[in-house]
Length: 312
Image 1 (cartoon, rainbow, N blue to C red):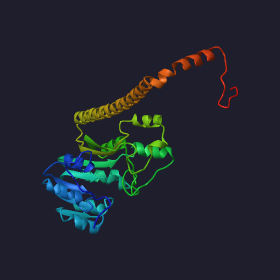
Image 2 (image 1 turned 135 degrees about the vertical axis):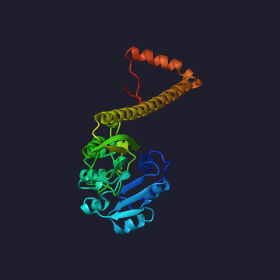
Image 3 (image 1 turned 90 degrees about the vertical axis):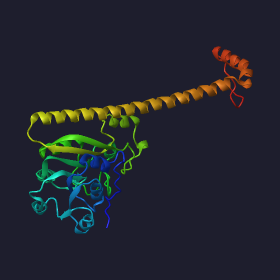
Image 4 (image 1 turned 180 degrees about the vertical axis):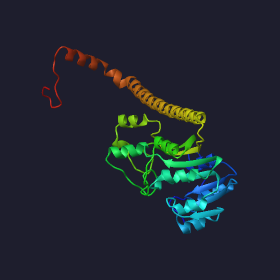
């Protein structure tokens, strides 16, 4: 049995939600993997020495995941039975890999999961960014194109931006301490928006938002213990991380602008080379007296015969 969301997990992949999540979870942890599907990610966790308890709504899919997990709890996250079976346990990490956006009430589910986090534990969450520039441009065309997977997965019930992800975590009693991003450039998502349909000024305006090409956010959060100093420090770290990301984006945009200027300079240089080559030809030099005569006639108000021999 497979799932449309199943994928090969490469722990060393760059710009990838799976590798970001593995990095944020760490090694040798007790992990509650919420929404473990067929266990394709469970296996990657186990390979890193983790002991995994999974939660999966489909019994057949859960049976496949049980190949690698210590245990798989079968049930609906939004029903009490799942959480009743997990009551009293504590985990080093709770993982929601592209799960919360599929729920009617993600906040209640996240709050229940936070109760299962060990005092020094973490929660790792990945979510798509509905404010990606491709979604914005589709909306400018009056379209909200649902797909089987991706930014506008047709099974998504909730949609999130960076700000609303952070608000969700705060309301669940969490403090975000790390944020990773998966970047997909404009016009390269599954939504199929086309560059030629938009003016450069529109594209530039969208790119003014440093998160316009963020496809997914992967965050690591810790339970808020009420220490205001710790929360303030975490907020400051988040601000600095955002600023660093924004500077990276700005540098990339400036580099692209320089490349564009380089291309324009190359075209101008090529044009000049062609003009210089023309000016140096024998034919052009022989026509110099005729060009001089033409200029004098025009300056004196004379008209010249047209192609048919008549006056123009």
